[in-house]
Image (cartoon, rainbow, N blue to C red; front, side):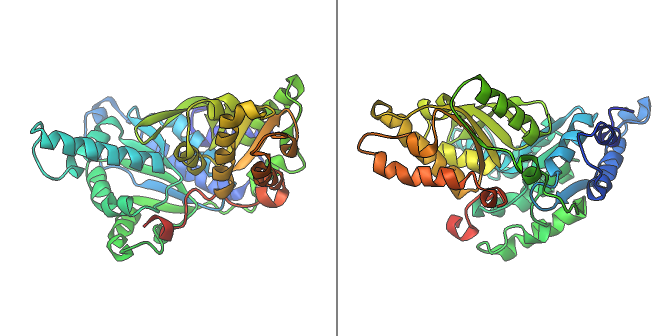
Amino acid sequence: MNSEPLAKYNALIESGILQPDSGQADVVVRLNSLNEMLKPTSFTQIFKKKPSPRGIYIHGDVGRGKSMLMDLFYESAEEKRKRRVHFHAFMQEVHERIHDYRQQLKKGLVKGDDPIPPVASDLSKSARLLCFDEFQVKDIADASILGRLFEALFSAGVIVVATSNRIPDELYQGGLNRHRFLPFIDLLKTRVDVLYLDSPTDYRLDRLKGYPVWFKPIGSAARNEMDNAFIRMTGGADAIRATLSVKGREVVIPNSAQGVARFEFTDLCTANLGAADYLELARIFHTVFIDNIPILSPERRNEAIRFVNLIDALYEHKVKLLASAEADPSELYPLGDSAFEFRRTASRLYEMQSEDYFSLGHNSGADITDEV
């Protein structure tokens, strides 16, 4: 069937969009098998409870195609109750649900001191198949509840498919009280097949090698270059509008696909966003496109401050930046009291255009020791 992951993958190779890659092929065959197991084989089996198949945990270096393979699988999966979410965003939601449950408990609206079982029950009712992008554990608050949370999810029949840069045994490495976290790793390995995406090519870097990443001046030519670069970076995947929840607020991402986000300058720096919002974007997305960066004259001081905070967040997390702007970085803030301070930002913007910077892996979170 053309809807199956393996058929889609082979079609992409035949069309020349993808190169043959034995490491990717091995993983997509396993994803294809899981997709087959998710299909009901007869009308009677639709109502017959079957053991849940083992999930899949795909790990490998950055740029090897993990997100692309997840795209193929998720789009093909015939399970109606399915959900795909970045793991960090999922854990944020879990903590918010736990907080809401405790508030209801104080009001006498629910019974039971432990919020984990009801939270897991609600999650399992909405999704039998949970697909996680960038599975990682860096926060002690996450580490402390993962074992009981996932034990409840697995008991409810939830199937997990995940991508990660780390093998399970390296999750929460160096974290506080890590010995208490180890049972979760053992549990995870009993419910998923751990697959290494053994590909020699960093396709993300390859897609931009030899191409500019800073386009000036603003205009139709720059827009076309940005459009073409976005297609290269996402492999032509359909972009979607998405939202992130940051401390109870929603941050809108106008266009996102395969870990790439695209914004207008006004979306990020005219809107009332702050450092926490930029840090969250930097954690979630490995590449950010910004269209139409203007000259930051003194009357745009607030926008310039936000822009500086944004670039700091992207730089610290090694997020790749592609942008269209009215001028080179050193000419964006030519006047005013903050012109001197802006030099550091300009310097970072030049460094972020280098091949050495683009070869760095995405640092989606601070070191564990900083978070615990």
